[in-house]
Image 1: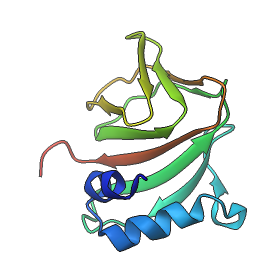
Image 2: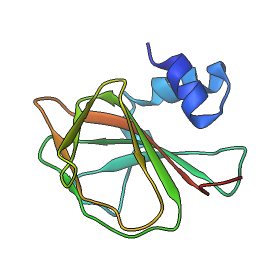
Image 3: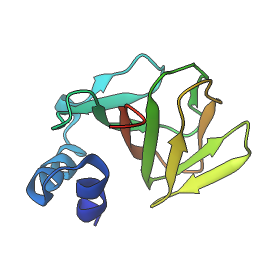
Image 4: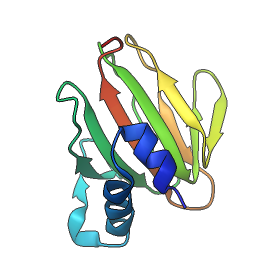
Length: 125
């Protein structure tokens, strides 16, 4: 269902996107992140200056604010992400773009687990 969007979002081939989606149901592929409640699968990207992750977390998880010099993009695949400061909600298919600099906190909300892609890299090539 999300194959084509993931392929474009991460700049990967459709077969690689299929492989990522197959990992969603395999608990052995997920590792804890630095944010309590969030687990991730690292995604190798062609642009070595960028980082890619598939991330998941339960409703109620807070992603604290932090400054960054990189651009951050999140693609919501399932669930609901709320930008607390801007009071904006992003549901499945929505993309959160956070420019370099101070970041507002995010909150995973709704009734189901949130699954999302994360791309972090330079704002300009």
